[in-house]
Image (cartoon, rainbow, N blue to C red; front, side, top):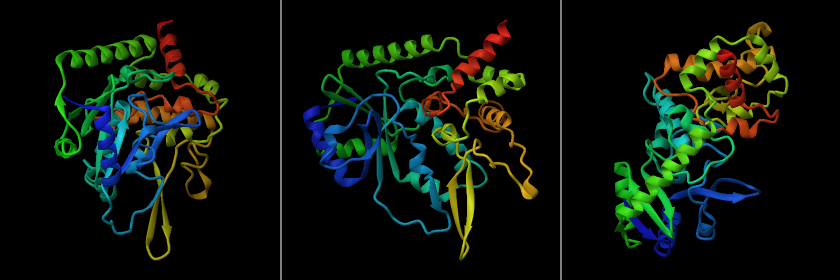
Length: 334
């Protein structure tokens, strides 16, 4: 692990803003999300705070795109501040779009053309529950560089060949030194503190596999109860870092447009003659839980929920996925 002083780090940020399409989390209107970074807003970047509002999947799977268009050369994208929950979510996205019989060339090109800088989470927010599903609040996979800000210093660790190349590039713009052992120890202690806090906070929440069994065996009444305030806005699915359902829209001249879709929208499964197996709201509501905890585990190696809690954050109906699963767990114990 290497260290750069904050004074030198400012020069690094100016270089990155000039050399890449550079995105990092900034705060506005009481929330935090990715923003394109230029020379004017490098001082607004937020470090090591949990979860931007937008999941990193949006960089690789846009809300709408023409999937018959030629791929054009673009400036490389650097995305800084990716939390561990979003990095873990890339496992199932890569499995879907890269590691099956069909490779999605648009997704592949964006993944190849991007450099991901992951953040440790040095605090928690209300609905974070990554540790409940075996994901730690610090990056362990799928990032090129790990970044931690501590005591007016920036600590960096390469995690891939792309990360090694970038670190060497940064040495031309800043003094880079090895971290001291006591600094690394403080980082380890902070990681343990946050992980323990999350585990304790969510100690009633069943794990991923148990949640799947509880959902399979659940009674219909609980889905009717929790779906009673659902307005079918689809926010829970569209903001999820692992949900990727889409419509393929035909346009003139054989153009096809892929557009983000959500299983909570009315008409999501409507077919010819108007038949719709998900027409009833409680059935449609339960469908998403079955997809995440029952069906996807049967088809993929990777988990379909990484505990980011965004679905709870964004729900207009104030529905808590965690409260539902905790209630299922408590019923089994009763």
